[in-house]
Length: 225
Image 1 (cartoon, one colour):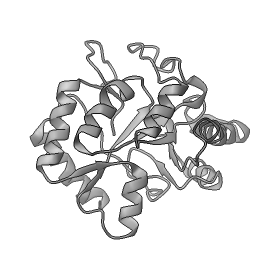
Image 2: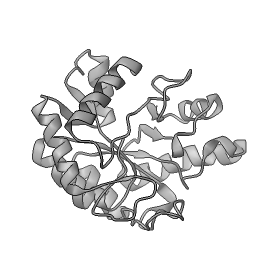
Image 3: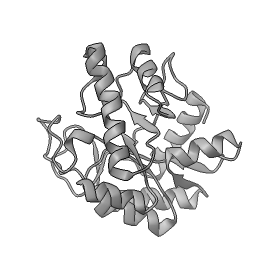
Image 4: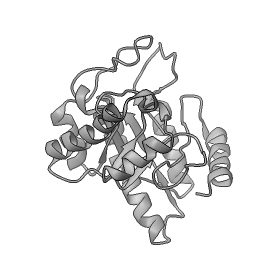
């Protein structure tokens, strides 16, 4: 689970990885014989029993640096990834992180370019609101409006959903399933873990080879894949 890749001195939420560190993390994956792929590819391979050397790479929020820093680094190694986009804020900035650095989000053309270059585009809701505090009507809007907007923008189905802040209870997971998504990404393991609440491992600036190895082992032991 990544967010942003760029040079950044002010990062109170620890969502930013420098380009140099990111490059070294990708090189570590390659040295280990692992291939970074989108969640769409990972789940397809998992269903076929062929996901042993694959690692799902996800990027929340849809920052502009995904196109400028992430995609070139991935393509250089034959990797792909999933980027989860906040549909109502395309081309704007991360207004939900008022206490953190202002980061630009991909515009519509950037989202389309990412998809054309083989990246999966998923929904990160319409407005990046925590779903667990919303009314039924607002919850349904956040889940369905993002999907509809991105499908209209891309001209193809959007099958992945990512819960803002990782907040997902039984009601929210059920809404994502009913909205027609193929999977949902959470953060932590819970009693809801499964295809619609997939747990992920955070990767940050401090994660070098030793920490990545430990995190990979912990992920496999805790979550089974």
